[in-house]
Structures are given as C-alpha cells and as structure tokens.
Length: 199
Image (tube, rainbow, N blue to C red):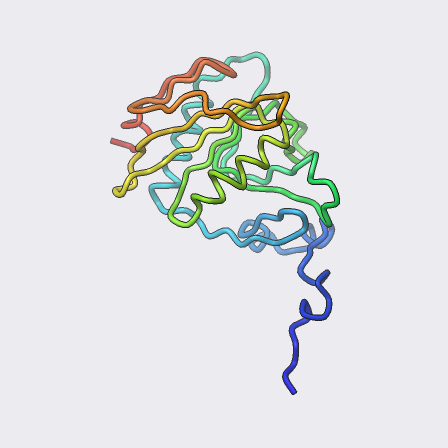
C-alpha cells in the first residue's frame, strides 16, 4: 500500500494562512508569493532582469516630486486588500518595482498604497506577468501597470503601459513605449532603454 501525500486526503494542507506565512523563516518568505492562500515558488530573475528593474526603480525615485510623499521598492511584498470572493486565503505578490504612497515603516505595503507596479518579463513568467497579475492588479485598483519585455539578448525591447479603467476594473493598453519610457503620470518621467540596459 502506498502512502498518500497529506494534500490527497486534506486539500486544506495546500493552503497557507497569513500567520503560517509570518512563521516561516525569512529566507523562505523571500522565495514565495501567495495567491488565495496557495504558495507559488518564485525563482529569482536573471542578472539583467534584476538590473533593469533596479535601474527603472532608480529612475522613478529620481523623478518623483517632493510632494505628495511617495516611495519606490523592488521585489517587496505587496499584500492584496480586496481578494477574490470566496477566496480561501490571503494573497500577496512581489512585483519587480512598486511606486507607492508613503506608509508607516511597521505597516505592510498593500495594493491600496500602490500607484504604479512594474513587472519585467522573464522566460517562464510571461503568462503570469501579462495575464494573471494584470487581472489581479486591475482588480485591486492599481492605477498604472508597466510590463517590460526583454529581447533575446535580454535588452529592453518594449514597455507596455496599462492604465486602469475604473468602471470595469480592467487595464487598457495606453501606450507601447519603444526606445524610451515616457510617463505623464503619476508624475512626468523619461528614461531611455539604453539607460535601463546599462549601456
């Protein structure tokens, strides 16, 4: 007789609670995301992926005005505030870059704080970045979603800028940026793709 894994007889064994997550070692926490209580393992992006995200975060940080107070973080937990109806658990993602309203240091960053979220597409993450997260971030009400696509040499090819349609809680493609990312909101910013590539 074979021994069944715990989840075969108890589907709840596949879920993690927020308290269970908080009890995990920090190095394990940094390797996962949680959606509706389900753990998703997230491998680190490539060297170039992480550098593009960091350079874009730096550009946002340099361009942001003194008021209103905003901050920029990379690869940081962003907890969902809305969730899906009937969801069995809590959710958070680790976007590559989040531009957010200032928050108290001891409070968790939530989607209600986010003004703009960036995902840099890596091999294997395209569906998650362009379908799953796009729908989730729109449902959560994040006003701007940027998807950075890299070419075969892992250089920035295009950046898709999605703006939230508040009535339908879906994103509409506002702009496909080529050669440079030029934003008008939440504040004006321009950065050449060459700068994001480090060339």
